[in-house]
Length: 381
Image 1: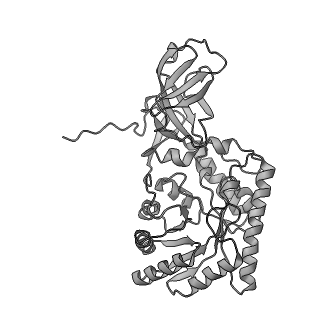
Image 2: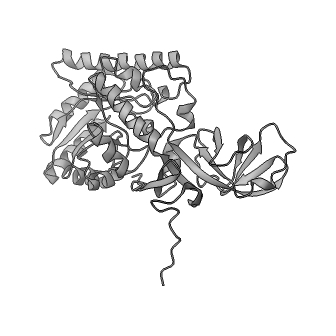
Image 3: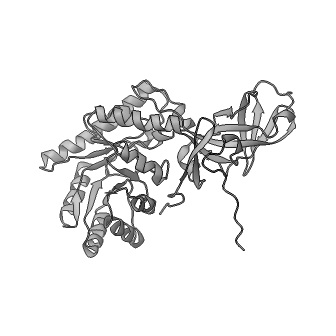
């Protein structure tokens, strides 16, 4: 006998009957994010290559490509497999990798998709070139340059030249441009400060491009940026491609930064939760905690009632399977009438929250319209 739990939701269900905790997508907001961002980037003559590490779902990636994306980004090689299997044909892995298992994945993927990868050491280039030659595949290679993140990437023009020269030594590799991502700029709350940081990153990237040109190397692709900076990156004159990921679903951290540009993505991602205990004045407990919400960006900043009206709530503590919520401004308020009521919690950080779930329950109005698998969940090699 095989015993499995029932699905939390089926297409056509009312939102009020969806099992909790569940990860929801508001389709109206989601579709507007895809449409508006694609149009904004295209208007600047720049390619959009969304980062799939945020949503980890091939169903979403295919919609992004249909909306005009040039392809997608993945952070890890194993993460790329579900997207390749689903029919995404252009995948950029925005991370360095080392090891025989990684080389095997890279060459296997390259036999199915147009694969581009990042390097920041000659040893990585040589190992990849030998593996690609043995496998009979060709791989596009983008040296990563440090534009301010102080993490991966070369920091000097000479180090970049060494990588470009090493790539040229392997017929199975193609120099395809530069990767220049400044993750630290994405969540700077002040709009002017974020713009200035993004501008400095673009200036650094531009200096690397000019150094290559002076050496006779043509660089036609400069890729990077993210949800917090793409409005600046597309206007920089340096980036030819941007990599926003969270824009499709958003989260509390991005919702907390200032947006002054022509496009502002809306939050479409929520965790649906139920008040499971209400025994104390001024406080209730819901059924989603650390195993259903990432708190690396802090506790959830926004909690709303899913259907019924209720008092304002603040999420004050997360345990493994419990979330403690305080009634704002009413420490002595009775709570028993709130038992069983449902709330929508906005995660602080979408990427690790998504990685805790198997599927999205997608709704429009008060009905479930689609169920999308999170098929790249847990693929972090």
